[in-house]
Image (cartoon, rainbow, N blue to C red; front, side):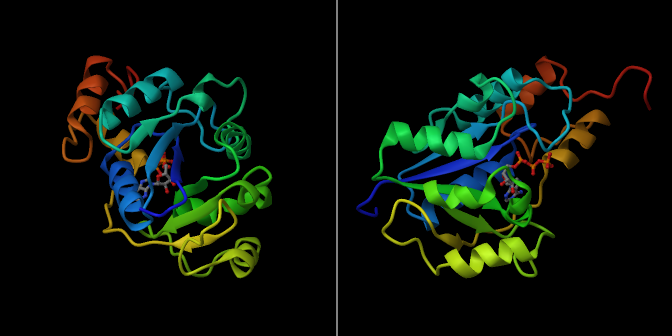
Length: 218
Ligand code: ATP
């Protein structure tokens, strides 16, 4: 392990959490030598429209998926926070709690890196954390929008430096072609995509009848 503590932060709507998220967390932990990965479900997502499943249920599914996995932690601060969930607020809070020493590493799939310039106060994220991105499905890591390219030109590194924040790095993981959107569609059709969901999460979805098509719809 690296001398400076490295804490990975994996935010998401987790609507629902699936095997792609868990694979991302495992790959980030191994490749980036993270001491811990914190799963941080959004409370009120300001970018994604709701599926109808509330934050408490999304959080519970994250807890079920993570279970007692060593090195994985669930952080419910965004669900407890009133109003929209902004990552910058979470980073500032975590930095105040954890002090200046540990490296914070925001872990992102390439869809989110491509989207970064739409995030609230996105330039300030690197004052508080590193960003580590990995290729996901059909979202390339090349040909990014100009503002993200500019950030990369200033902050891109081959590997995480011995610093608490400030670098953007890429890391590799074996592709896991699954998205929550596709999963919700399959669940709404009455399918049972057991290979894409941790068993305890599938069980929770079935017991609470989540993601079912509304009565009357095809
Ligand atoms: P949706 O389909 O509703 O957009 P999602 O599957 O992308 O949902 P999120 O909760 O938005 O799930 O994702 C949280 C983080 O996990 C993001 O950084 C996203 O890029 C990453 N991620 C999600 N699915 C995968 C996957 N299959 N492989 C790698 N990264 C993933």
